Length: 575
Image 1 (cartoon, one colour):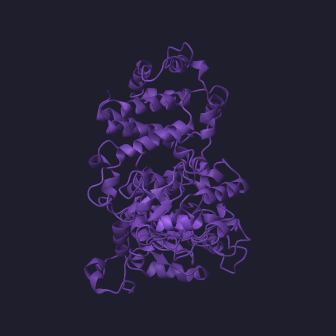
Image 2 (cartoon, rainbow, N blue to C red):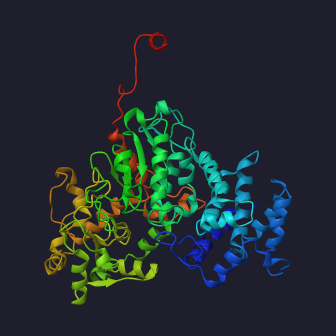
């Protein structure tokens, strides 16, 4: 059995591998990386890895596949074990992941299954290998995995993830915390269809749709009795289903409609206690009939305004009264990279930067008269007054942000932007230039202490002059006076004040990994050095904190109560 040190080496090597491996899980914008011609050719023309037959240089995957087909599990572990042991060597893992990605996925799948189904399950070891399995399967579209002639299909990977999550759920101690959430699974077939590809859909800036679902399945907030539930989560990986090419928008609309109408507990409160996640700028508009079918449901979404690609939608999906603005998804390795690139303030060379597109598609929504904020930034760049770049590599982007005092976060196609969260971990003061973006967790975070929000119509020399005039040197320690200040009172802040407050608050925007990017020991995990209080201060607990206040389920509407015997009386009268 591999040692913990070997496993950590394997995880570390895998992160390095994926950083430059197009088939890996490192796509920053949702599975957009392209494989090389050689890798694509192997995936499409030799998915069963028959070309490795008789090889002496590596694993004979053709023979491994035949053994898996001909030998029932767990007897097939006699074949799987030696391959897994071989993959502990970094060079072997690198080579075999390129030569036969489907074979690597299959071997890791069965090894995790073996660890969990043994008489004495090794959950911690299984979690490490599940992380490896997730890293490889996330870079492969589920349709490719299903088309390959291996025993492991996407549905089996999803099922194994659910088993792993049940093992990770700690036994409840005393009363369950509020809010209590019932999570739909197989009550309606559409839920199964819309939660396929969990590994694939969990990557990129929209991955929180997957991670919120899976976090709840392993949390103490989960209840299995609907009568105990304060809320009902309807899991669906909406934007991934569209952008990942699973279903077109018209079909999604039909699927969502059928799903909602089939939910057994939806009508009791007109859906007011039902939760839907919509993880992109499209928000609930990925379900075009949402206004008719789920107008009173709770939306968890990063988007609070309009989306440029839908000019006919002139009212936002987001309703402050019922919905919750949530953070976009930053990978663990992105957070660590940004934090490592953050320079001391005195050595930062740029006053302000923006990394992104400034073309007209990122301009105002067609139905509004709002300012073209990215156009204003483009003009400042053309005058040599601000640094603007696009198409940088991820390390280059992180280095630029860590070398700037202020990072512009303008509205684009949508109001929200992942640049906000990236800026916080680069310790670059975010300057939000998006008038109608309601930032996540404004209910309990003192946003003015670490965010500058500036009018979109006033982006020009006056903004740069204001930023340049902010002193670097600490004049006031905000923490000493915060208890005596009104929550939104303006105080004299310096750049260092903003940066210090950012470090105190930014981890509320992190979704801690459950089944991916897992280190063997938390005390050795760099993520907990950046966020030492991550167990208590994270995006999941922030969402639960606000959700508890959103309870709007009626205890009388649609329900009936009377002295004992009333049910029989009603039945008799009906007969």
